Image 1 (cartoon, rainbow, N blue to C red):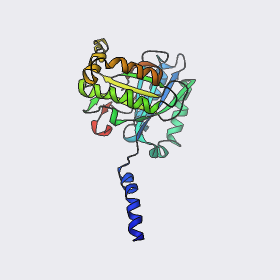
Image 2 (cartoon, one colour):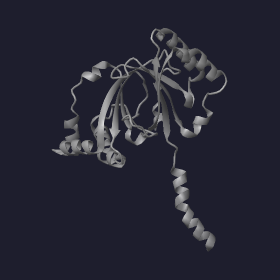
Image 3 (cartoon, helix red, strand yellow):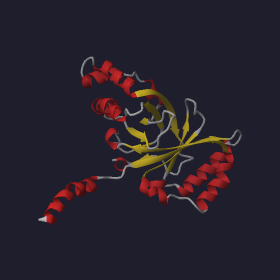
Image 4 (cartoon, rainbow, N blue to C red):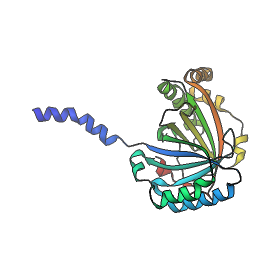
Length: 254
């Protein structure tokens, strides 16, 4: 009887452990090139990534930032991978020696590193595609308002996209580490042509078509109550500097 009772008590925990899947994260490293070193930097970075980060969990994609205060900088993006795989990343030996010897001398003394957790339930990677252009929408979430933001804002936006923009590939990410820079949440739209930027924004109409007439005003209040601001950056994929070809498989983002 004692063993049976113990088993009954343990069953929910066992089920939870079986259902749990370690989340995937991306490491983002913002790189600033020293004046006059762009060509040498790109040559060294391309060689490094293609040798040490071509595929698997440690694959690296590189983007140039084309707008905002970071315009002209490079985003070095590794992953997706679980935190448990971080210990096995390329590091000591030839990898670090190559980075320190060939890449670092061309960098300015400015670097910013963030780890972003991927949220598949709020994302749409329903088809394979090739990276090209990214619209990166970053939000500063108010302190202790994370759950309200997810329930009152993000979940409702995701529903609009699911019903009205089902073909739009996008990803949702949260910063794994606390910061004071307004980098708490990121919504990334992936698109091919810059003509996408010129399309009429019908989000308010789409929102009310999904959530009811007059609902958009309440949505804006929820945004104001849960966030302190936002900004958007445009990024371009640099296949010549990346370890991969930029192909994204839907199965890898589920």
